[in-house]
Length: 551
Image 1 (cartoon, rainbow, N blue to C red):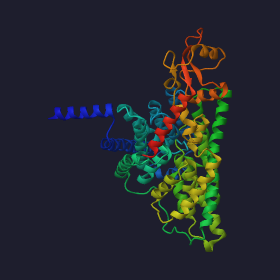
Image 2: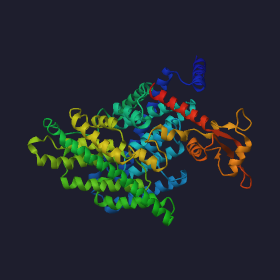
Image 3: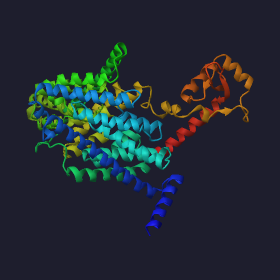
Image 4: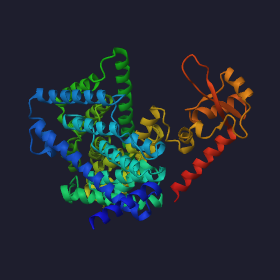
């Protein structure tokens, strides 16, 4: 009996690998992958909390900031330095660029790599981020969790030999489950995967992603309980509708704060790159030096340590004074920029929640003091600000709005949050390339924000479209050799992104494709790329993409 069952499973697995999963089979795969991704998110969070409790000597990591303020100054200094050293050695040994992978690489994998991400470097990045968050780094845990879940999705895609559509759907399932398990937010987890990672809302992807999201949520609730991350004051309502213009102003302000946060990170990264290029220190010293700077800041402002949920909760409860809220915003922005520029790892979502809540509290304190007769609770501004800055940074107004509701359990103040989120997202998207992640990719030469017409050419290799030498309707070899002698050709490993501009330059219907041998040999003619063939290939790719996004 056991032999027959084993043989049956092997037959099913063989069919999935050779022909792809059916819809029902895919749902079961999504359920299994969602469970694995949810467990990975739970394990990542638990590991950080255990390490923090051990390193800082506290039993309640939820009150880590308050406890850290009572520790000796040298301990607050030593921990991030040692953490930075460990991260630096880890990244130097196991990555070629000493850089941590996060959400931007997941978005790139969905768009350009058929739903795949780097596996070994992804596991190393998760470990580096865990060390960073446990030893005083000032980032969040959602980015590493999303990439870690995507690594498991990549393994599954490789095992079943998934095509691009299936691979992207599996990636979405893993991301949704990881976000849901991390934040107890099943609706937002599913929409985050669709809005941020896949960047479409195709019906065929929704069912498996929803299944995976529910699986991650159930596991998270079994471990952490069915509780919200933050608790709000009992009274948290709008004072009629006359208060909505104030939330519009808050949204505009939060959009600018989000832009300042993102540009501070990019400026700090450019500065750190310039210093490293000029002084040429060992790569592992960059995170260690960053840890030293963070330790010096933490001596005076321990609230920068880790994800910052204690300070975020204090802002939502309205228990911080105006001057402290403003100072904490400035210091947290600096700490996040320093951590990320120092290549220590971690995500941007939790810091943006904290910065947004503090910004909203500061704005609300002033607004309610100016017009108390028209104002409700000032803490409502902290809630709206939290969602507004996070949405502007992530470029995800829909899923971020829902995450805020699910993190707080407060669904009665939707108007205020929606108004602030929409205006903050509109402002920020005009000043950066849609989001922090897409701007990160654009700085590396990967332009996804402009849409598929801008990046699709980079996914099509010249060798898959060209007409080989000697093939029917091949280009005349004599004309090809003349163009090669003039320096007009493309290499066989190039993509249409490099090849298409040549057609505008040479005004010919084709360009030669060459292969290079050893240094002393001339380039070998391999074939020719015809402009009409390239255009057909691009049209087919656009058609497939449109079919995927509208199916």
